[in-house]
Length: 393
Image: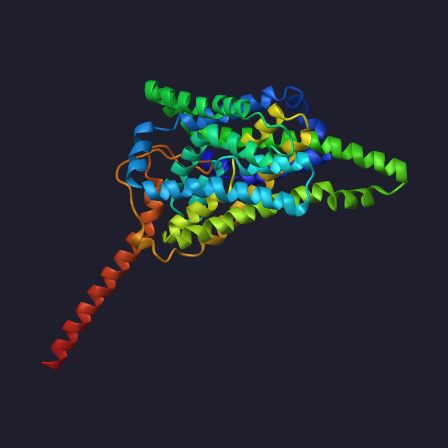
């Protein structure tokens, strides 16, 4: 029941986005306490991830499959930042929106990618380890890449960005892992609720920032309407064809590039179909919550946070759609899919439960079914040959 509720993350974000457009005051209580409330909520999200993480199992899987994990992490921090800069220049975004899009592109993979990979019948263990590795790497890479790519538009304090990332992401994950090792019974009781809490907190965070920008955009619309005596419908149309429309288009293009180029790069590198899907989803889906927190904490313009906030809605709709599309296309090379031994951690927003070899089960179930079918076909062929031999005698 809880896992099913957690898997509805795209629905929560979409519904919250609609509420933010119609009545942004619903989120005023949370917005007024920002950016401290944003940092606290992200820290709790990362803590819920950390309590299901066993570092020993993480390092075991890291040792077993170093090349695929390294390739995925490099793809994450090269493909998305590059396209963030290219798209912002191609669309002529304002400096604030350019910084927001580049900051989003430089963020690590989001935990929602794990459940999308599961839906897409991809390599779930690879997705989970990539998420954790890129999250740890974000302490250095997100501030550094943001400064390099966006420093020409506005001043970027890489040191402060790095400290914030360490505080609200890496620190809570390590704390959660420590709690998991010291208080296993408590964690066991809390773990079933962790994914649902994380998706609700992520939805609240994204929709609150979006509502804050909706207020500003609505005030611009009202001013324009009073000044030019234009109907509200025409104001909305002009808004969508202007700044807000550019943000939506830029975020769509960014995530599409991540999904497409990530899959293509993995195919060129010779990875199997399941690994291609995992890398594609992991590259295309960002930790937009981190982008929101960093934008609201370190940049004066509220527009910097708009691309990450819009991404929370657009990215999850795109990712879920891609996952369900792939779900009905059987991976052609499932027999060659590598399997990890033993129990390892697994955490994501769709009910991948801690300590269960969900990834292996998903990865190997198709190959086991195919092996059984082949054995049955061989037995039938043997019976037929024997029958024919008897008929000839």
